[in-house]
Length: 123
Image (tube, rainbow, N blue to C red; front, side):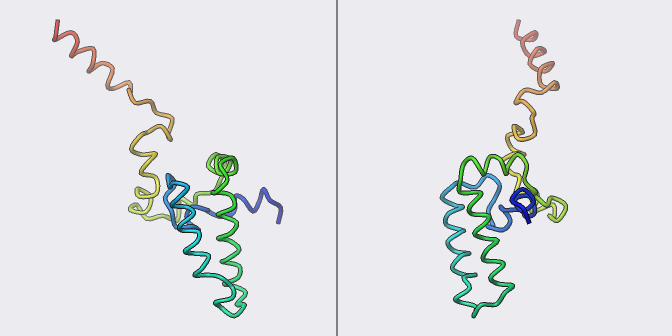
């Protein structure tokens, strides 16, 4: 599997069990916790668990590097269709609350007429 295909095959935030707006420190702490939990030495070389450990390392390699994380954030696979509504709202809370992640400015076409009306009333 080539690097481009592999980098978009998993939701790395989900692999590391962190939100999409997680800090570097949170990512590092969760990586350490999961790496210890899934380390092959603890599981007698079970292939499936070794694969899980490698997946955790791969996710951390991308999310811990600012340039790779930005690239992943722009082109990664978020597996949105696999989330419940509660998970979706939790994972994307930063984008939803600010709307910047959706490309929506803080002042919308709906708020401008209200501001103009208030200015008119004040005069």
